[in-house]
Length: 450
Image (cartoon, rainbow, N blue to C red; front, side, top):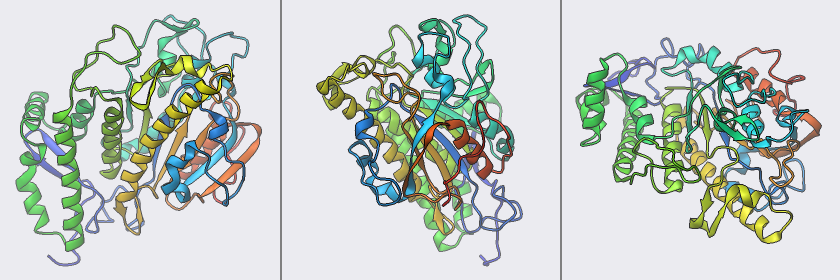
């Protein structure tokens, strides 16, 4: 096929009830690409990953600033991504504080983390907080993709009930808010996310359901095999290899989903039924959901995502890393060194899961860079130290280069009480989303690109 042959960025491999989006390839036409006007320019993506109950900050915060800092113990999980990481110290989420409302730090921590707005203290139907940064972005860039945003997690997010000192469970179980009173429920079943990503929304629901069920007896790839063979004959060598690698990764995820053992409850939450397809292994659960996020970004199915590893205030235990106690109880460590060491183990576990996602993103080539280069991924918590329940000097990391707009590989310390909302304004600006105000923001965060 001639070198000038091009395919649309929106081309999909289709079969009965199935539509598989394609990764970025050299043959993508700049005319029909949703990437933007400039040929070969990949889109910017934005993701927010959350771990609950704060961190053991002494083993999180680097002592040195700038590029020549040493990784503290928790951050050694990111040693292979130091050049892709900004450690941001000094950021505050003031609206997670009581501000006259009394107890309920966990509920406020998660609900205010991306909204930077004060949640109304209620466990009734009159919940109110604010629109979250991911949904602001989705409203502006979501029109370019199949899904405006992707919300995933590993714990059920209840939408009612009293979960934290008079605060609705909606606050401690949801990070994404479409508007001030409407949380966006997260999907916790990796099988359901897979079906959502690869189902053909243009075909009747019954046909899609039948295809999804068939895909887990055989393979979703078998349904699009003819289409894939026709496309491969037209591609150059590099694109054929890229397509093969992508399809192999899809097949690998399918196989892992089939091997998944099911459970009907979420550890740490009593008497809550969840859809079948949840792995018994928490680590495998996070890995599978990370795979879905990576695929969604790789195929430009969405550019905005949130991933909550566990709901705020989670009492999950971690016996597989020799921590049989509940996370929340341990976080109230009272400066007991043994408990702090166990908290550190939990923190390292979550950091390693994030590092695994970063590895997936960095392996995907896009033009002269990688998928990670074109991503802005924030990882952190709405609580600093779990024992103090403070919401200043939060543990916040920013990964990726935002399409060349971020100068990573540094530890940047900001003045006390710098709103974390300022970081979000700066990231929105890099997405081309012009927003003057988000929550308690006071302006765009500086020093991300110098």
